[in-house]
Image 1 (spheres, helix red, strand yellow):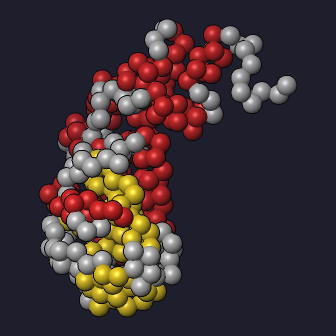
Image 2 (image 1 turned 90 degrees about the vertical axis):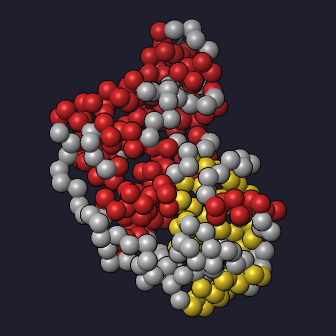
Image 3 (image 1 turned 60 degrees about the horizontal axis):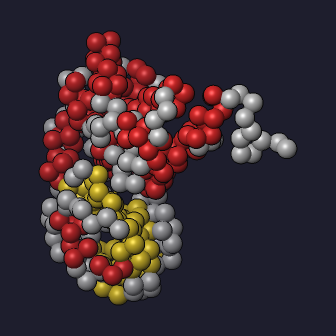
Length: 305
């Protein structure tokens, strides 16, 4: 379990009475904290914190009573539903049975300026109409599933992945709350597209952030992410993964570097992480790829006998 977190809410969980119930803790450069909790029946209230906290019910069938910042809640949960707890609000929550939840913590300091820019000054954290509502949004559920899946593959989520997932989730949250973000206007200017792609190439081994790429294009992170996808066809995180795989393939073909060194060279923390990414993208391991490229007649796992 990784205990390096940045939000007050995540620290309360790992240091407070629910600490023994925590299964997983991951943090992405202060942008997001992810927790998975096997909770026990009873009072799961928590003190006020300056974070927006999203909870996802992983089993369903719990009777939840309390207040998460938007008024009284008294209902049976459904598997996969998400609910947002308001910042600076001491929640009161009682759950009747043991349960499993995933929690995504947005430190306000990391998100305030982005939300304000994306909402063109119209965003307010005081929008109580959305807090405490059980949301069955397919957009949010898909973003959460993707975030947790990639985190399982790559360990702690990258800053690029965390910011992109957070933007997608909060944009949908604001839409559901009646304050949609302003739409992006077309794709990137040619100079901005080229400069950000060049920066990705130059920083391939680094945990580059969406904020850094957006600054290169002189845009807010939220608008940059959408405009990049319009210009390139895929989100920045997916494009960066493509660049890393391409570079890893080149190094596997043309050098004798160990797979661990190649993993570091292209921005992954270990050869195991590179192997998981390779398996997902190319359906083979890095070693199998090297062998196949150097000996086209080599037999690979899964070949017919």
